[in-house]
Image 1 (tube, rainbow, N blue to C red):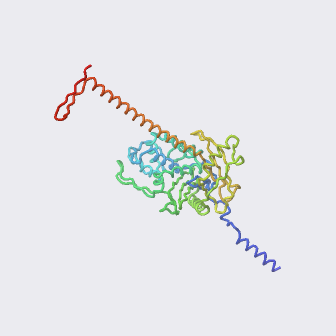
Image 2: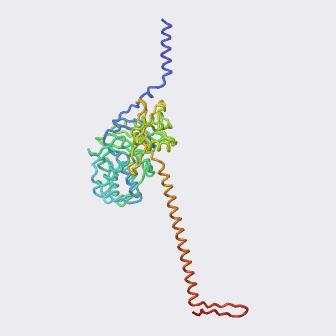
Image 3: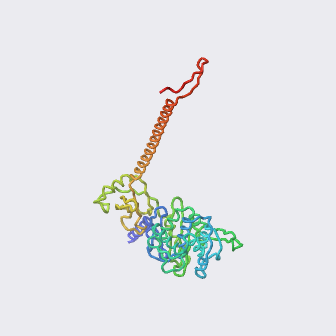
Length: 437
């Protein structure tokens, strides 16, 4: 009996030491926020999601779009003059920097005021400067959101103050942030810790602005690698937070919505740790296109195979959980029409073969265009060069014909009117006269 007990205990100990996954590795991170997403900023791959498509109120993370549009459509050195509507249309007690009617500040200063202390009247000033009115700017915001891939977002104002029609999703805000991070001026403003607005025409003293995001370098929840972020809060939205962080070549975006208190920071840290520690960049070898893995093979198989054969040597990578084997990845193809060129594109949907508790199963899509378009550009260039050469040759021929005509005309005139020339031949002056008819 004693021997059996010893063997039993030994087996338990052996199993505990040889278990390949710890509790932390076997499931998604546990977070408190109602909705959240962790996204790879380079590819848009979703690593983690919790209700990422649920429409919720964004609060002041709205200003990410406001700042992006200010940069894309304005000149940072321009001057904004604050209107009465911009100053007094914000809710009493909401964030502001005490701008007054008729006060003038630079566009960059207004964008910094919107991003750092979340000044609502500054956001309105930006909107009126860019589009002439806040409603027109809202139209621009919604158009730009669709362009960024945010299809479930509907903006109603430029600052995120409460409005029942002003909604977004965690996924949409990540896509908007991903788009914004491609702009170097946005990245600079997004990551600014402190900024000074010098005295204005109505304010004799400078204003000092400080970021409210507490995970940046000077914050209470400082996190290594954070490059920028935006906070948000209203009573209905609760706490919202967008954060971007970079370590090495990996850049991640975290969005958390409807969180309580400091939960926005603890949840964001949990997701960033998960993204940086649990994933590795893995090369993806795309399989050949066949009738079995192409969704619409009958009329598109040949064109899809041609596209694949010309692009198969391209290097594609995805972030894969360190405990998931690359052989567990499946690629499905679909032939789609490019809405602009009307030519066939090959869409590769990459996903895990089986659902996993370790990571989000959908690894994103790759759209492949046929490279012959580059060849067509080369051919067009050669044709244009040939046309230019032909025009040059034609011009030379015309000049030669004109010169020949001019010489013949000159000779004809000589014969008709005679040419008087003098020369000295052995000291004798010889005169040539017009020939007689």
